[in-house]
Image (cartoon, rainbow, N blue to C red):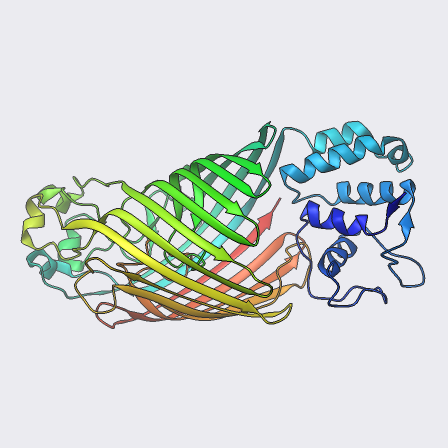
Amino acid sequence: MKPRYSAMLLALSLGITASAFASTPYDDVPLDHWAYDAIETLTVHGVIDGYPDGTFRGNQPITRFEMAKMIRNAVLSQDEIHDKDRKLLDKLANEYKEELKGFNVRIVELERRVGNIQWKGNIRYRYINDHISSGGGMMALFGGGGSSRSRSMLQYMTATLEPDIKIAKNWTGHLRMNYNLDLRSGGNSTNDSFGGSGGNDIMSMFLGGGGGRKVKEFYLDRAFLHGDYKNLQINIGRLPYTSFVDRGMVVTDNVTGAQVVYGSKIKGAITAGRVNADPNGTKNSGGIFSMFGGGGTSQKTNYLGMEVFATPGKASVGFGYHRFGNRNFDDDGGIFSMFGGDSEKMAADIFAVGGGYQFDKIFGLNAAAAWNTKKDMGYNGSKRSWQVEATFGKEDQKKAGNVTGYIAYRHLGNSVSWRPDYEVMNSGQKGWDFGVKYVIYKDIVASLRYFNGKAIKDGTNENTLFGEVYCYF
């Protein structure tokens, strides 16, 4: 016999996506119970259903038959169960295989579900409408500023595949592959961009160029090994990284290197490796030929990040340090850049603090600030980043009608924010960022985001409308 609260432990260890904010239907499970979230999640996913009289009876022993029923229901609803959870289900299925036969759940079916490779992914539609400033035009040849206004619109479809591969005890492999299709032309989205015209051809001399954010055709952006040793997590390869302390305000990028995260309530993380070229313009050395679309080399940059963060109760707090080894601090190269002259580059030492508080199951508030102690871009406001964000809702992509959203004010200095985690706005911008997400149907999620603000450099008005629909599988 095992106590009824083994259902609670099963929920906590399986890590099934938390449900919406509806209360549990059980009269004997108060809101402040330590296992409330676990019971609520398992109930919504149909893993447990309590007793006919509306009680859960958390301290009452259960039979092997009742335990087998929970395992069976967990197997049938394990769309997002991770590798370590599949191992747990595998062990439980073998332990209760005789009882499971009574539910017509064959062990071979369990083995298929908990096999060495788990495929997941999504098909995503995106609509982006940008209205921004886009570089200095011809005057930038002589080191001058100036800016032009640019409007860009993009619609594309993305298919993403993410196989997770069980390699050995405690180790898994993870890949992510993406293919983009331009819905306006029907062609591959190799050269499409948003957030600026992005051209290096001769027209950018007169009309102004600008980095923009490229939409590639096909690319493998993640390939890494993951080691899980309880309170120690190890990632090696080309891995995704979002700065923990500031929630992606300083950096959200793929790092080719390694990451170690250690701790439980208080965690420390070290991430080191190489990141792609500076999004603010480390592409140079093309000389005069870059005027005609040629030349220009993209430089990799060394990166080191060290963060300490904690989640005491409903609060969170942390401190971080980021070093980019080869930042470009000259976005106006002057006439010499025509002949292959390099802009000034040096290391960036960035410090960040962040914190947040979750008032209840719906409303939360977080804030972060970061500053660069080295050279800035040469104009006021580029050497610091900060944000304040209010959130509402609790995401559950499995629950139709689930609504979440946020409202934030962000100042993203481009001497600080590398690739911030806000697709609706980018480095060098400040202003209001709004967003809402709605689950149309199980695993079909729509979101709409809007940025309205200014360019930090010259104060010109900028705005972006960003809509997308995800279909997960």
